[in-house]
Image 1 (cartoon, rainbow, N blue to C red):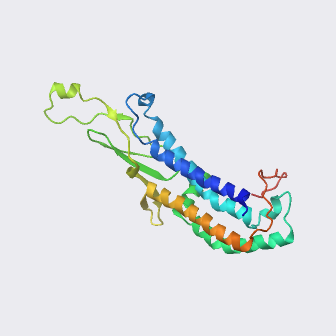
Image 2 (cartoon, one colour):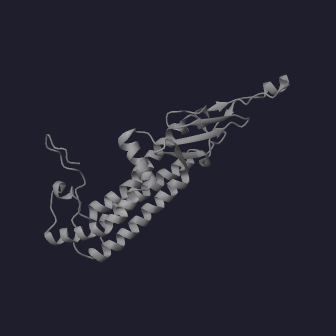
Image 3 (cartoon, helix red, strand yellow):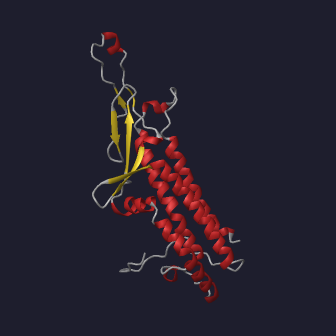
Length: 242
């Protein structure tokens, strides 16, 4: 039922999963013959771009659901073709039943991170630690790069032969090394495993769609649904409507 409208929701879920998978793949060490051996620094920018895109795609799931099947305050102002009264009544009922699940998803940690990175500071609150193969720990983040290569400290009494073969080695973190850093009211930070939170967030978005489909089947059934506009209408000068 209403497969054309659910296709957009499913697209956002698939998009979120795509970026989550890329976050993991970009951390894999390149093959010795791969040209990326000469561009090890690339993973740092790619990783945080993929993270930002993942959060945005997953968080858009409840918004798309609400716009396609519900009736929020903005809908009546922006739709080119308004639904009839009967459809609006159904949409309002869907909105009422869906709202608690929408609000719960909006309180998830990554929903809150999304507000900060997309609307406030522009950067995800993430930290990583990485160890060089021959010792030394490095801390990094979206604007704090860790070294691409590092030489371990020489042990006391090391001979010349050891020094010759002590070449710089790549410094690359694994997925377990990333944490979300969530500021607390007392000024401290709560550290959460980033990839665990991302996987849970993606699963929560999928479960939200499943719950919304149950509500849709009960409220809308096979009744006609008017698709929302694919492009927001041009705002009139002086308008502040979102």
